[in-house]
Length: 283
Image (tube, rainbow, N blue to C red; front, side, top):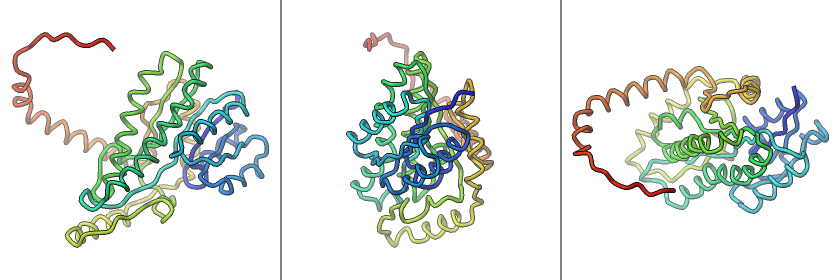
């Protein structure tokens, strides 16, 4: 099998580091990016010329373009573009301020968009490539207190679902990665921001915190083999779940949604009104 060239954001730790190492250990090449160069420099020491460590803040559009161009120029192609960088904002809808929400979207959503837009011209030109975006099981069903994080992931889901239809004819594949709860340091101070809390939500915070702290967490190292199978697949899935807890949740979530839509079907149908012909603008 021909080795692949990866461009991965957020490779300093967690999934990004695990997946970068999995690719390198089997002989692939990786442009490993992080906000701080020192956090990825060790990969160069361990894997030599197979690694191109790059400093990259995905909120900086110019830096994103330069990093993608540098990776392509260095390796001659890009086969796998994996958007992993992101963090969590903890707070209810009422508590969070707009600036914090915008900053979250700037990283979690626009960061992925910037990398995709920078990489697409190269992927279209070579007629191949695989774009993978890290979403979450929370991109399927939202939770309280981390609703803004969930919102970014729902936006990421829609972005990639549309993208997959747009780039299929160019030979480019698209996959959303939807991890459940894993024992990474994603809940560490470097990966989350907590809004000042209102007393009115104290009981909710306590309940949700207890639920999260008692949740069964998967072994992040166990995802390495799965990610390689996904990128090696001739027809990879648009959505791929990591772990055994998310699919049961998804089944229950969609069953509940369908039941609600069906219960209101008569009202929905009546809201259609009488058929009318209207000229649709051409795009």
